[in-house]
Length: 182
Image (cartoon, rainbow, N blue to C red; front, side, top):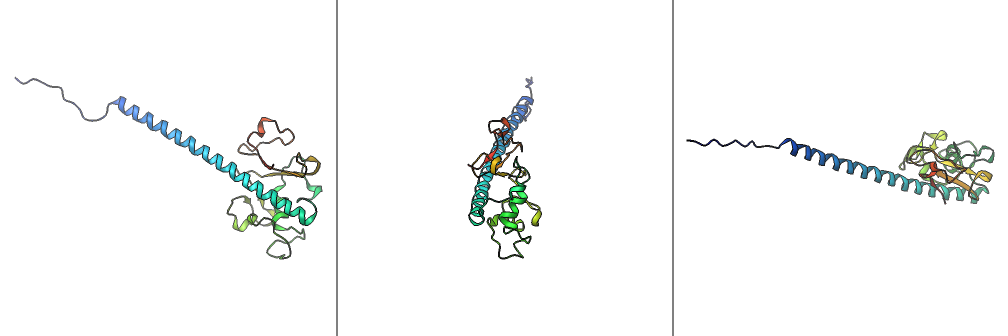
């Protein structure tokens, strides 16, 4: 007589498959979260560098012209919508005669990285005189000077990832991710 032996099937059981899929999902989530964290950190570092470059260009502009960029009558109390004027003073038309850098060779370019035709930093949106300076999250930088500024000379900042800022209340929670000039 032959003793009947149960046949073993080769392959994975349902429990083994579920355990494997669960591990893969967890590892994928960890990798995605780490990648997002690194991207945010990279954007913040990029914004800090860009703000330092812009602040240095503003200081150079003042040394040559006796005042910071952006005409006083156009200065915004909350710092919004000033990057086009900042772009014009620091790159496009620093002597304010209405012609761009390719036509007027007498004007000074304070920050060559603002060239919209050679936008390696990715911080210029638009072309020509209508270009705006944007942060790594795609929002305009904020700029204000004079009596509205918290710093003695001017304020220059990015609203950060969320794009929200409250310039008049530095302790407001919407400012947590802001990147500011010091």
